[in-house]
Length: 145
Length: 283
Image: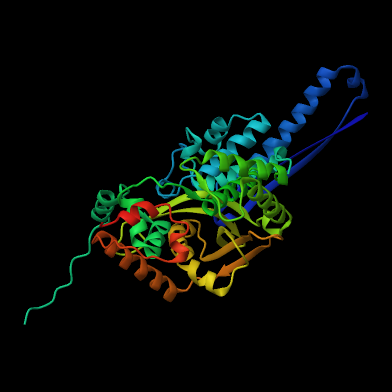
């Protein structure tokens, strides 16, 4: 038998600079014959990670900020709410940092910002959203610090 | 008897227009006001007549270059990238030194580009080894521009703030300074108005983030043979803030009324890039 162990963790920003995180580790034993079929083995590993990731996302979506899977400051349509419209925009250094980390991790920063906060450009992020995104990106292992 | 009536307060946009007409900017900055306080005529040449300065004092160019290196350091910390080594900091410093070509640099006695490079290396090494190279908390802003109508009867105040961090439910404003020697209480007193006013610029952000405590800090790097990096904290004091507000308001009223005159002193004149037009003033 081969033992597979996949883990996934994610942290999301909360009001007043607190944060909330969830972490899942999934273990699975598969038949040792799979070692001769790398594609099938990779498929099992991917599936395992997918289960861990979806479980973490579901847990975070049910937390105190959301319940609808959206971050607290964003409406279900992804458009900024009234509080967010008056919020200070991301600072120039934050925008530059998001670009740099995403570049390092091979992630499209605009797409990521759009997925998380429903914005079309990084400059449309609020300061708080940008800070949360930076924390998340740094936490996902691309920082190298 | 004629009843005295208080003049209606001028709206911020009118004040902004007034500033724009006078100086080409619709705001005031603390450094401009400070220039006026040191020498009203130097303020006139720099901000009203927009005379091109004949030179940049080495101290000013050097301070900007050190700031550029620290900015690079802080930015790497924000992005979670390994902090730069001293050589990288020195490269940033030299790039900034070479890029700022607004006027030729005038060196002080015994100074040269080489001696200032050596000094920068010593200072940046001291910074790199100090605890200040690892700012605590979350970095929110580096060299960020803030602007708000924080002083009554004055145009918007504009300030570029070196570093804003949040740590343990407090928002910290850090201002980096280079100085000939370690700061005394007189240096703190002299620099306090600027930091207190910057705190007012940042206060709405603190409120937005639900943070009540503001911490004000200078990190001072000495330009000495053995540079020292020291931190000084300033407690926000409403009386001191009120004093700073009054000082800036009075200075702005004097500026807008056209009160420009020289204030000769060894400290002001030896590094003044407007010496020539000053000598020709009203002649």
